[in-house]
Image (cartoon, rainbow, N blue to C red; front, side, top):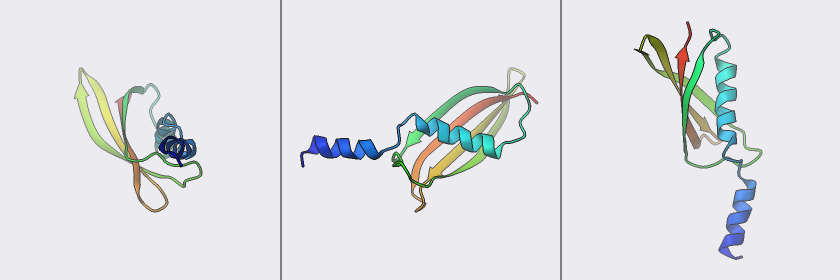
Length: 101
């Protein structure tokens, strides 16, 4: 097979990159059920090792990695790692929020 065709077949099976944010936010909402009203989503970053393929079982672990006060506002940083069923890292994410409480 030609290289372009092989690349196209691999990309066709990969999860669309925009879905990474959805995986992260779904884990965040499921884990952080009790959030004060008025939080502001202030930013998000991702680092991709490999895009999952459609049908992969994903596990996302979320942790609070930073808390600080800037300009009289509470800033909170959450990091997440998403792995496949074999435990291989697929992508990492970081989200910053202005915490209302």
